[in-house]
Amino acid sequence: MTNRDGRRARGALESEVMGILWARDEPLTATEVQTTIGADLAYNTVQTILTRLHDKGLVLRERAGRGHVYWPAQDAASAAATRMREALADRPDRQLVLRQFAASLDDADAATLRQMLSDVERRRRT
Image 1 (cartoon, rainbow, N blue to C red):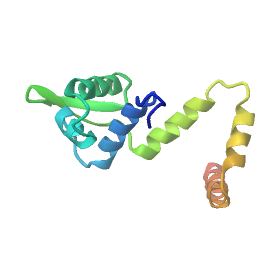
Image 2 (image 1 turned 90 degrees about the horizontal axis):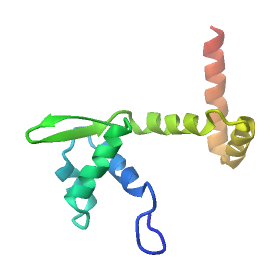
Image 3 (image 1 turned 180 degrees about the vertical axis):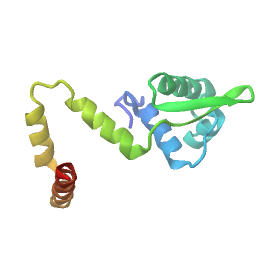
């Protein structure tokens, strides 16, 4: 994800780092993340991104030697659901946003969502 001037789009690097962390079953150091992203990115940049993600509560960390190891605070699906809830929070046009989202779904996703909503409703009644 790059802009016309060749720079990464806002938030693209954080998303890339989160993708790397979600893809692994173990905590990673900043060096391991940097190696996975590629040599064109400075270690300090990766460290800054990891620190920002930690400050936002998106990653957890613990001391490992002189540095830290990092891992996601939530799995990818839970993090996406959190972002969706945040997008709806305190919106005066919440119903319109939901309607636009539902209208944008393909038939398979719409059917899946209908089934899931039905399951949730059934569980709430019991």
